[in-house]
Every structure is written in C-alpha cells, then in structure tokens.
Image (cartoon, each protein chain N blue to C red):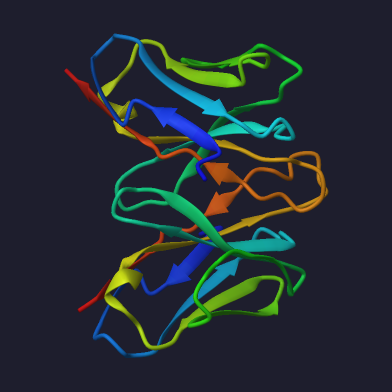
Length: 113
Length: 115
C-alpha cells in the first residue's frame, strides 16, 4: 500500500524555470511533511518541511504548498538551476511517539542549461 | 566529521554468503534506522532502534538481523544473500522527542550487489 503518491516520476526543466513536484497522502494522522533531496551516490538530505497548520512554507527558492482538505502537497523550485538536478522525495510521518517516515516514490529532476 | 557513516560503501558478493554493514552516528541521536532503496529509487524502512531497543520491524525476511551495541551504532547482518537483496542500504538517525525529531540524517549508503 503506497500511502504517499508522488508525481511526476521524472521532470526536465530549463534553467531559470519552475520545477513542480506533487504528492498526495492518505493517512490523516500524518502531521509532518518533509521533502528530501538526493544526489547520485549520496543519501537523502532534508530540504524543507511543513506542518499542516500552515498552507505554505518558503525557504529561498524552495516552496512547499500544502492543501490539507485535498491531502496534497507540492514542492516548487523557482529559478531552477543545473545544481538542483537530483532526485526529490516527498515524505510524511506522524510525530506522535516514534516516527515512521513514509516516502514517496521519488522524482528525478534534470535542469538543463 | 561525517555525521552518519556506514561501511562498506560497496559490497559485491555471491549468493548464499553472509555479510554485514556497519553504521555509526556522532550526532548524539537516540534513534537509528535502516532503509532499503531499490533499483527504482523507492525508499523503504526496514528497522528502527531507539536507545538499543528495536521499535520498528517492518516485513523483512528474518535473514536480515539488525544489532545495536549502543545508541551510536546500528549494524545490519544479512544471512544467505539472495539476488533480490541487491539494493542500496541506507543508515539514518534522528533524535526522537526533540522539537525537530522528525529530521532524518542519512549516511551515504552501501551498494550491495549479489551475484
């Protein structure tokens, strides 16, 4: 059972463009929604995260939009750069007690010059 | 200083062999994890230990046995390796019951290839 669905599987964006990755979740007990960035040969690293009490969070060129009623959230990368080329994972967890993070299936982003 | 380090980076072995992967974290975290990333990049949790106690044990063949000698170390031993075990295994850590307990810190992974 895939509790966090992520799309698209891959994405090619021109340098300077906007990259958008979407995720949907099923478990209403989830209350923490992070995005992880993974470069080839490296482990995932936390990029940005949001809690459901806000609808948007921005950190530099990265923005999470969150729609609690639709159980959807998305990552927007503004002014995409070749250095942003990586695999992005959305995730969700329930922070009560010992957390178990459920990851989306990943989106491979390629930013072309 | 590497926060979460795991060894070896690459592991190539024959079917039926037994192998171990070691992980250490120097972040002072109390919880450690093993994740498996398959060829399609899907990340799935296998085990989690909090202060040496097993707290998450997903549906994983019992050929996989984690061991946590102390809260800074979590090792993964795999018996009778099979072709389907080929994947990248990531160790991770976090600090439960802190304000930002959900943040996972991952190691660089161990690429296991079973021939």
